[in-house]
Amino acid sequence: MRNRRPRTLALVLMMALISAGAGAMAGPVSAAPFRFSPLPWLKAAMDAADLFGAQSVVDTVLGPTSISGGSDGRITILLLGSDYRPRLAGTGERTDSIIFMTIDNSNRISAISLPRDVGNVPIGPGQVYAPKINGLFKSFKKQSGGSRNVALEKERKAFEYAFGIQIDYVAFVQFTGLERLVSQVGGVRVNVPYNIYDPSIVDGRATLQPGAKFLQGSTLELGANAPYCYTVGHPINWTTTPNCTRALEYVRSRHGKGNNDWKRDRRQQGFIFAAMQQIGQSQVEGVRQATFSNPNDFYTTLPLTSADVLYMYDRVHNATMPNQAVLQPPTYASNVKGTSKQQLKIDVVRALFQSWFGPLN
Image (tube, rainbow, N blue to C red; front, side, top):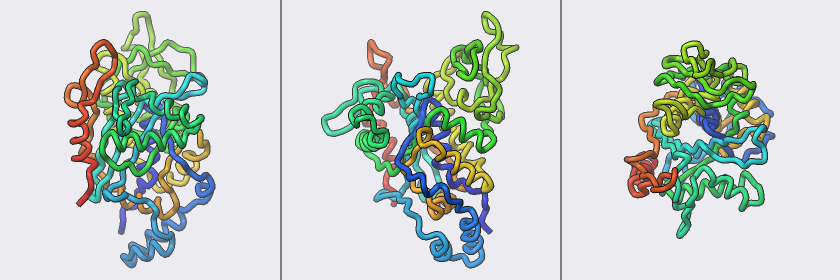
């Protein structure tokens, strides 16, 4: 019998989740298919396949999947987290979280984060995007007359060129989308790798003293129902400051001693993988509905018909994530003198992508 703990939507859903670490994700989706619950058919197809051991049975019940790994044979997704939230409407939208994830035929996931302060990125023949890369989406959106979907497709192609890889799909999420998804699954349990004392992050749900504390160890990070995150005392008394258990703040935090953008990027990767591991079959339909109830919050180009959901379950339910990297100095980038930007050591970075994201034999 198969292990029926589907991580089906996880590969897309939780990509969204971390993306919101600084921002959001995006991609074209038709809303209509998500009003239909495929779970009875999924269960019937899995039972039939277990009994008869025939993929043809699954295809007969659900139809063949339309998810494709392209000519390189692997499924690669660009995850984008937007910093948009209602209180900052009109100020633009930056993708502070940019993560590339790919899965091979042995169900091994590789993840690479592109830090938001990287600049001078080659995005096409003779084209270099000089500003910090988190503004590329905003620039493409302006060029596209305000179309998010067109801008995201341009960004997908730009990164294909920059890193010499195929990117099959895009996923995009905003702050509110992350909150809704985490709430839908009842929170995501993560292993906080070290104590974080962030004096600056703001929990926008209430007017309280800025800052948050995240204690090392196993913690259930919650959605919108999480207690307020704040600090106590002047100067801050970290002993009496409550532990923050709000997922959005956990994946956004980047200030405080021993904390920075690069460590945040790595925590975001871990948060996504933890979320993927924890989604259960009974939660799948609720996640589908929550994910697509507001197309402004979350968008993906991944097809998610019943057959596609089952296919992704088969691909990722026993996945591991042995390869993780953040493109930070000194290995993958160097600081640009006189600025707060970094510039990629593009040959080194492309070699890394080729190693982890290259064509499968």
